[in-house]
Amino acid sequence: MASYLRFENVTRRFGSFTAVDDVNIDIQQGETFSLLGPSGCGKTTLLRMAAGFDKPDAGRILLDGKDITPLPPDKRPVNTVFQSYALFPHLSVRDNIAFGPKIAKWPQDAITRGVDEMLDLIDLKAHAGKKPAQLSGGMKQRVAIARALVNKPKVLLLDEPLAALDLKLRQRLLVELDAIHDEVGITFIYVTHDQGEAMSISDRIAVMNKGTIEQVGPPAEIYEAPRSSFVAAFIGDTNFLDGRVTEAIDPRFSRCEVNGFGSIVIDNDKPVTPGDRVHLSLRPEKLLVSREQPSSSDLENAIAGKVEDVIYFGSHTRYWVRCGEWRLCAEMQHRKYQLDEQSPKWGDTVWLRWHANDGFLLEQYRAEDEGLLTLPDEDS
Amino acid sequence: MKKSRLPFATLLLVLVFFYLPIGFLVLNSFNNSRYASKWNGFSTRWYERLTERDDLVAALGNSLKIATGASLASMVLGTAAAFALRHRASKLQDAHRLLVAVPLVLPDILMGMSLLLLFISFGLKLSLFTITLAHITFCLSYVALVVQARLQDFDFNAVEAARDLGATKLQAFVKVTLPLLAPGILAGGLLAFTLSIDDYVITYFVKGPGSDTLPTLVYAMIKKSKDLPVINALSSIMLLVTFAVVAVSQRLTRPTPSSI
Ligand SMILES: Nc1ncnc2c1ncn2[C@@H]1O[C@H](COP(=O)(O)OP(=O)(O)OP(=O)(O)O)[C@@H](O)[C@H]1O
Ligand SMILES: [Mg+2]
Image 1 (cartoon, rainbow over the protein chains, first blue to last red):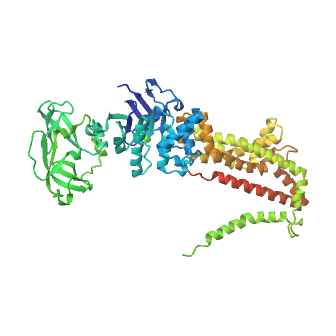
Image 2 (cartoon, chains in turn orange, red):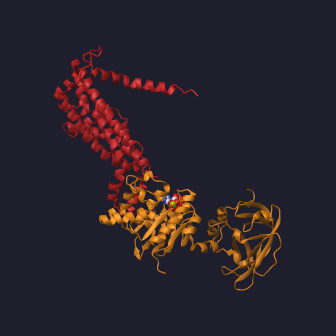
Image 3 (tube, protein in one colour):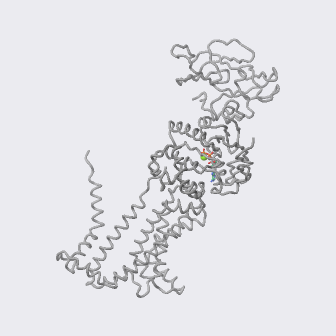
């Protein structure tokens, strides 16, 4: 598929520090594309280069086949929604939105029509005469979005647009933003460090870490098939297991020896041969907890362990289960009325069960990424 | 709980300390008597006398011209200096910052002397023009100070937003930066205006013959006691004007509700 906005080997250094390191991204027309990563990973820097506020030290940025790298911000058909809103405090809501069209010298009636359309879109017609200081945070953010959208940019850049709002408002505006995207059909690039936001709004996500792209893909793929331990740990919680491949069962599955609880079956998410060391990501909700030993089958793994911690969350419960030298986190959804259930308690011996397909072999593992997990370790 | 009387007492003390002499002066400007020592009934004769003094009117005209010129010029230069000082630190910038701040504390007599020497060595004829130049040198620092303070909490994202929305550098400056900074620049200008209007020491050094300003003329008049009540009247008017200017300037510098 032809790409619409393209980052080609883009690098940006500040002194000896490389904030964006040889990044390549292809963004399709009309999609909502998220840049997701921890604070300081270079998301804003990348976005500012797309907007024209910053220039890459190497590489180029192409929009619709045209190299826009040398263009100043006012000559690029992209608009930005700033994290701090950056509304013009001396102008009314209406004049804030009309700023771009006036600069572009639209005819007066076109300006009026365009602004009215936007006021309808963000549902702030009643507040058109107010100054930004008289608006709530959510309203300001909507004005910032309208002010950018009215210019009909080819790409809308949003830098953590909801970060300054409280949780409920954030969720509501996220839904609104999605609806706006559907309505205007403009390509959105959405920067966030909140994985939930990225998952719910994006067609595709690029996970960034230390100035580089770790993985690009649709939300489900990022979650289910993380390529690196960083992606697995940054998006949702997971258990990391490592072992050595002992036997190829068939082209799809292998047997693997894990220190401490013997042998398990794994899916060959990447090519493996006996003797390879592999790292497996196993999401807590993929592990089934039961009191009785499950009947064994070829592709099911079952290991016994002792419950060391139980945290009840209402809709689900998290168990920390000690299996030899491993401490695994399992999550159980409560689809039945809990008070009648005999759920496992602290100190119980339980079985953890999962299908070989439910784990995912990582291409890249770094021990430091375990620090990203919110799973507490033993002392805590 | 009993409220402490201390704050109130302090306030009273300060007010008395500051405004007793001024109140006395204003009162005396309406005193029918020539002598401050005794009250001879209410009169506006000194104010009437004021209008008959051509030299006073001329000096007032000079003062206004100088103050207007000096404050306008220092608004432009001071704002430019404040912007230049915003840029990232370097040895040169440190020196710049120091040089802009020093005139705030430099003894007037030193500034007056040095300016006089400069003008003479350049062969400049002492006139209203030299006075205006001299006033610009110290007014500039005050404007720079006020605008710098404004720039501290200035949201430069708004300027980037303007650029993002298609404005050229100049358009962004005119449509966003300037309107947002205008209150600060104007407040600095008003401050400069009041400083220029009542400067005596520096003016005394760099004024030529016949280019008296209000302060230098008043000082000359004080020597003749018959003029004293007229000066009281004049001072009272200036006091009123100063109060008005300060009030306006305070309104302007009051922090505006932020855009966040
Ligand atoms: N102008 C600059 N000068 C020096 N270093 C900079 C500059 N801008 C950014 N950096 C550095 O580059 C790195 C990436 O910054 P960037 O703002 O892109 O991060 P981010 O991913 O947007 O983070 P956040 O989620 O906190 O906004 C940071 O370590 C930052 O300190
Ligand atoms: Mg950022």
